[in-house]
Length: 210
Image (tube, rainbow, N blue to C red):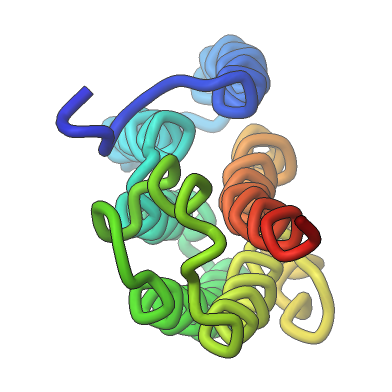
């Protein structure tokens, strides 16, 4: 689809299934949650949930690794207003820490994507299938740099050290449906982003062993 930019493979289908189940549970719980809370900004809450679903679905179907990055950045922006839902000092501190640390992570992931594009010498730029099939021609040094930056960048979204300090405050201050969405769906998106670069690395290793 769209020249290979979007596709559904087995790994993406697993991620989309997890995302759908988590989002369904969060959506059902949010109906009762909003009835109890009765705070201003409920339309924003629903809009941000739908924006997150769209961005996460993009991550699940994207086979252009720049689109994966765009989807990951969009999930971050969609969740930030939800973390600040209660609009008090503690939630402001939590969303600030979340935005700062996740910005560092997503910037490192972008740099890793640039390195991956530079490592590719043939095929359609950053298309997963072309990266895998042309793994033997990838420049090893740039590919290793891409893996390291993507691991740290997307690892930040998963809460891996050393950029994991945002998780306790964010999960504690975000509404419970949002915390569940971050723990289940956001982590799945980040894991899928890492799995894509692992696919490329595994193909490269296999080609060089022949």
